Length: 149
Image (cartoon, rainbow, N blue to C red; front, side):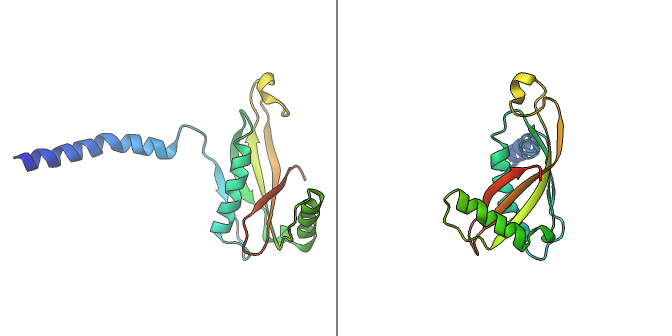
């Protein structure tokens, strides 16, 4: 009899905790759409590492709501852009010889109130916002710059 009660209690607790767990996974915030596109240069794991840095920076933007992040294309990972990433590093006094670069585009919404918007126009949707990252062979991504191109 005790065994039956224990099994019943475990199932009952699981039944009660399941909705809370699912809500925790979904979260109260907005869902961010990630578009990995098609790449022969980078894996999903490579992109996820870069996206994590983008999201860390974005999380410091008070009141802004991120809607989407999209990998631009392998075409943007060219010698010209790689050279630009190395020039940025040199200008910042960073001793890096980047061998790879990756570019993303995002959309987000600025805060609704003037006082919270800061550098943003209040209550505006920003699209085409670019994120530029670079890394040395086998090294971690570094977020080099962001904005409109």
